[in-house]
Image (cartoon, rainbow, N blue to C red; front, side, top):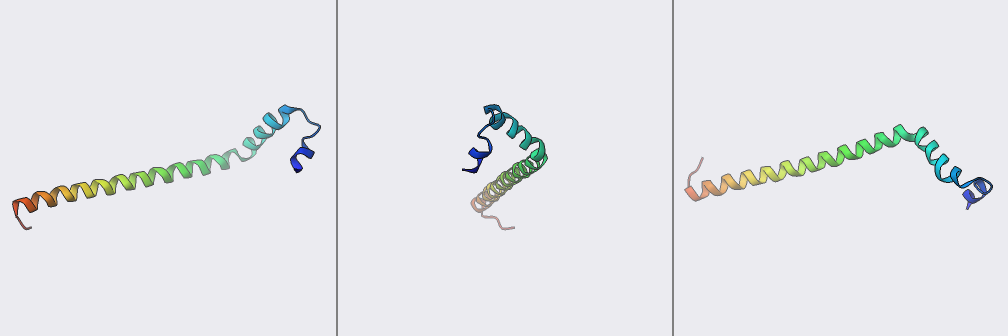
Length: 73
């Protein structure tokens, strides 16, 4: 493993604290934008599923009540 050679003579806090902090500082905005995009995509997908389910519910409710009264539009 190459990372064992790079971090071999350094203290533990460099590997577990300093390097992740530097990664977050450098790539933080990219990580947040990707995370925001994924959350927005999941929210829109759930909203679409809820709207389709509501549409199906309304259509079935009106078609079942109109078929029981035997009325045509």
